[in-house]
Length: 168
Image (cartoon, helix red, strand yellow):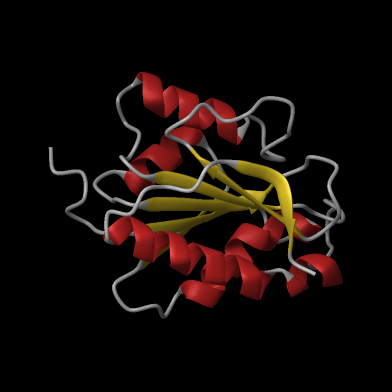
């Protein structure tokens, strides 16, 4: 199967009605008019994610990631390696790490799958994005477009970084 026939895709994961859990959708909103880039929004259900990314390469997932780092901290993880344990990669019923591992075991993982996470300030119902997370959107968009450009030109991936970058 030609995994890249649909081109690059960015999927924003989360719930925009639950405070900073909506950061994935907000980042996708910022990227939606990027020429040659497909975007999608998801609540993070693994089968939905696998269906969305089928035939796309590279694929970038954007979600709130809880590690205890400062709010707005940007995380980048390359799913070619198992995602590090210990962090909570999602506020959803099944974790993002579990969804990625399920796709890997089923042979449904894109060749390039990168997770960009943003450390939330709060995850509560009926709340907007926090100031700290809202301020991180431009940095996240810049990093995502850099990753897409590198992947499209066959450059080697960066190593996984969890909790090492702060956008402020």
